[in-house]
Image (tube, rainbow over all chains, first blue to last red; front, top):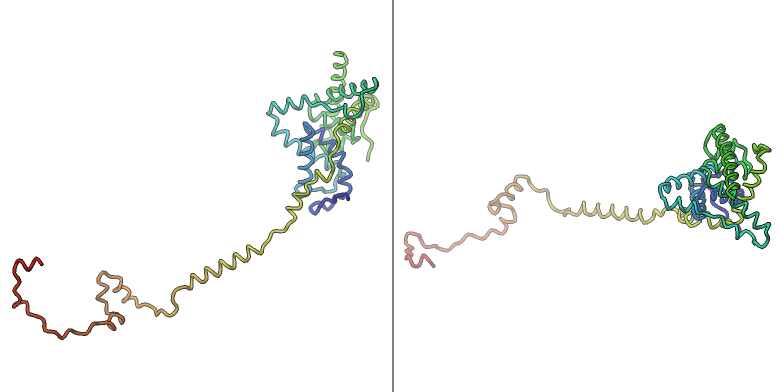
Length: 181
Length: 127
């Protein structure tokens, strides 16, 4: 039986829609956080804030845009606390997506695809956080830059600047990796 | 939802990044919503605060305070201020209160020897 969350402090949120967005919320939390454990914690903190009414949906944007912004804010709060921790940075730098679990490596084509994924993800993770976020929102989640700006809490002009710089940086990183190979 | 602002020249880059992030999401399975939603906190916080014990304790305390406040003897007569002053002095036993007068010993009717005729030697004086 599906669980129905209590949203007495957020009457504008449809519980079913919230649950349907859970997958996307976790995916976005993975982008904002340093590892899976932190992503789960950030998401739980977000849900707790929604349940307690500390985060209130006003209906001025889409629920998804609002959720992404709240998740990002919680991830940033945690990031500020751990920013000086060299251990945290080292752990982030060594975070490797478990591509092997996604499928078998029997075929050469599958192996090649996984190598390309790893190359792109490595280059993407080396980007500054805001550039990484804007590329995730625009390239992967198909958000217009105006909505991405809402999630990031910046102006549209600033979001566009980050977007252009992120694309250029990613292209440079992929080109450099290709040359190194 | 409006169309994203994607330059056709970036389609290859976009496709590569989409594949990478999608592969990451496939590898990192989403935890169930019911597990992430703070249900235990919800259950704890949804329980209303119990006012019964606090109310009973307050009433009991008020009864005790009222009883202690009115504990002094109700039948005691108001004390005369001048008599209270005399009784608080160092020679309080001289104060002729009613109780003392009621228990005053009767006057002695015996003949006591005169001090002039009472001769005590030096040795007897030490006894």
